[in-house]
Length: 454
Length: 162
Image 1: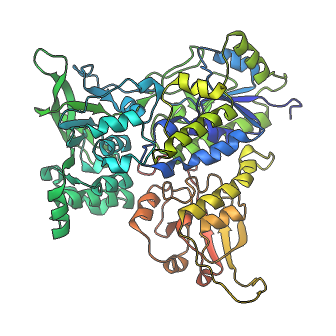
Image 2 (image 1 turned 90 degrees about the horizontal axis):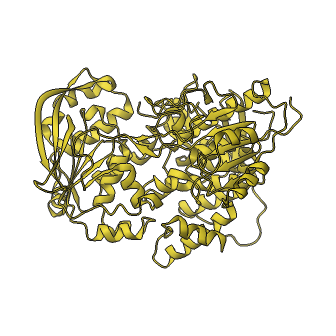
Image 3 (image 1 turned 30 degrees about the vertical axis):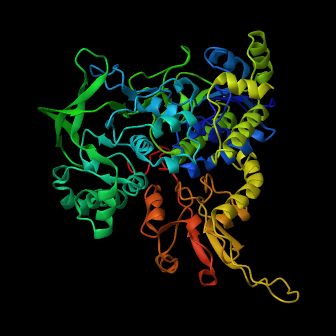
């Protein structure tokens, strides 16, 4: 056992960062923004406040004397990973996935095409997405991808304003949605109903969304009923709900509700984007060209294969929800650009002693908060194991935050402490109170810093 | 893990108060019975609950009728990694518990909403329930609830529908 105290730091203060911290004895957390919590704050939909309850346990962790939070510190720019490694015995990379997979089709850069990452960032108040100002003056929106993020986007586009105005959705978004002309949302996937990536809770929310009715293509569901009996329970229930929504003749009450609905939503299957079409002579989107696929194989492993046919869909808004993507933040850290993760074995970064990773950076950008929780506990386990076995070299004492704070000061970077964040938190909650919202988020880094340091 | 007192354990202690308050807000207030005159504390108004933790150890505790199994885990400060992340609001599956068939039948009906979240739990069985939805009654006296692993043993994480 080493006689000096182990110094560990974590880069990123989202679920991965905090859950990793919970299994360590003493830890410093560095965060680029003045505010903590990552995708819990900027990713989870405003109408899913219960999912954000994890913030309570993160807050308790941050306020504990063994944990120190340093916000407003850009690792990779204000301080390098190498410098962190000199100051700490172990550095954990938990900075998630701030990029997105691109469709790789012509017209992707036209006005009216957005990544879900940016759209979600916009309605959740991520400072870098503040200027997105998506044009919602069209009738039809097409979302590529059928995971839970795609369903979040659809729901936010179609939910009654009366529901949204009581959430922590940003004020500019609320105003934009109040003026929105979007009445029809298509959620498009490459494969079939049995391969859909969303989960049943989110599907049920769409089915039950007030003032909307489902609009599906019955033929998309050929053969699905027959395949039900072989499916495991979770997949079976999800598929049954889809079948019921798409094919079952509704009872009188539901029929009436649907006929009165002013908005529609529907899945479209076996479609891949091949081109975003512009209005002739304009750089605005007029529609999207979709290739028609057929499935080879069945179940999870089924592959979408082109048939050669295409179909054009008129629309004024395209949101590409085909995956977030991690980016390299420091050249000294190994990065697998094909998988877009930091190469690792159980959280231990390959060929980099003293470097660990957790969360989406470790496994890729899928899974819910609980998935990340397990993943992060796992990395922490690897760190503790390495400390106890001597694999992690702790023979030399390390200065930890002392030297990093000195470096930052020299570079004119002032960290935001957790109590500074609590001032921001209180201002947001107070502003929200007068509007009947849980909080009114501050939308710029400048504003956040101003509140933090006044 | 037993060698060090991690932040998580220290947090759990202070989180008890937090969660108790959170549970109180989430669930409808329990019935209160008013009685005339003072009554001694009735120690037999408790329900014995046995948990089998992930190491196979049996932990016996008591809860009050009306408490959810999540309440019991928190009140008794039981050390189950990551249990009850969403604080009993049906927004996760981390309070996943497994029962034997007989006990499972006594637990009462399961809502669609609970099943939706339960479907995401690792190691789902036909006798699985979410602990935050099971409320203690005297008829459940002596119940045994097993805390399953939350990830594949090979230390690879998977989300529920893979």
